[in-house]
Length: 435
Image 1 (spheres, helix red, strand yellow):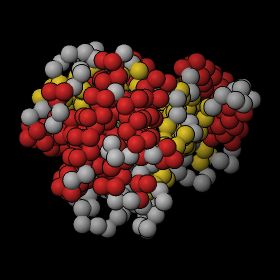
Image 2: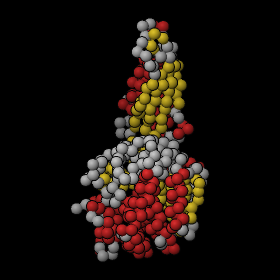
Image 3: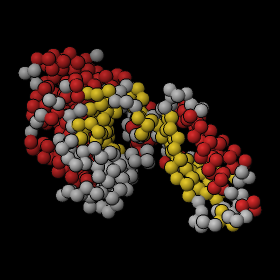
Image 4: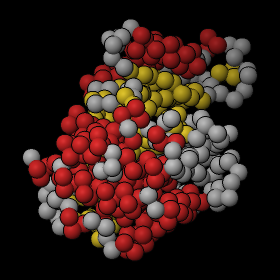
């Protein structure tokens, strides 16, 4: 039986000293003092009231989704919960974010992060807590991320006097394309952090499992938009025009060779032209065509190379077809760097997960070409991002992916994520102190 399909009490009891192997593992990896703290954490997390509280929070957030840098109501909810727990925080950070502090303020400082923003998607899941905001939905699970981190806050706050350092709770806005993490860093909100851990829900893994890998885990991402300027005219006399549609067509074909013929087959890169917009009549050649897309990379060198070659190819094809082109890399949205898991933080988090969930429930995840602004943190400090399973195979929407209007989660994940956050952070402080 998958250990996480048992009831939560039995799962969390895996950390109890009544299991000799797990008790030995806790003592070996986390230290005896952290073992005691973890037992206290489990006693709190196994309470039915705790899961009920988490569900209420998640559903409030889910009903009122807010887009990037507009998370004012979400921010207020978080502050209300932190106030009720007696946890201090700094806000606003990066417009709608905040950073809470638990502990004495002494080093080391360990960060736990949750992103806050929703997506411009109309929810199509019919349930009692469906989004009440037309055209907006938490379709990437950020409502669950916030809830799990608030759950961790409650667990950690109960043993704040025993911490061997300080835990920082980072509630970050604008992950969905607007690089909120970079603004948090620019404002100095994370100065002094030694390390950071984050979770992202994953609908294709069952509840009770987590997964990650050391090194590159998610790609970097950037976008481009180009305008091909030609000379319009009637389609019956194309020789009197400078056809931008033909120029764009050849540019799109040439761009595909950047990956197929200019990139080492063992280096992951993606270039996708995602839109072409030009012309409205079937008998007129337009004067201009706008097109663009995204490119992905696992190294900053890959980013620089693709950016340079995209510009060269589009401008060259424009010249060949007697057109002109302008290329915009839309850097006001800020390109995302790759997310690189620090091997030490990855190993530490993996061991904690194995103790909490069982060895077979901690998976080695493949790297993926999706992007996450957690990559900004991984550039500045030792950091690790893990995926946490939310799939319940008994529900009709069990395998709907992220950013789907049918996306759902199994809320049993909420206390699991809260306990994992807390255990990773507390045990990091303990091992750092012991070393």
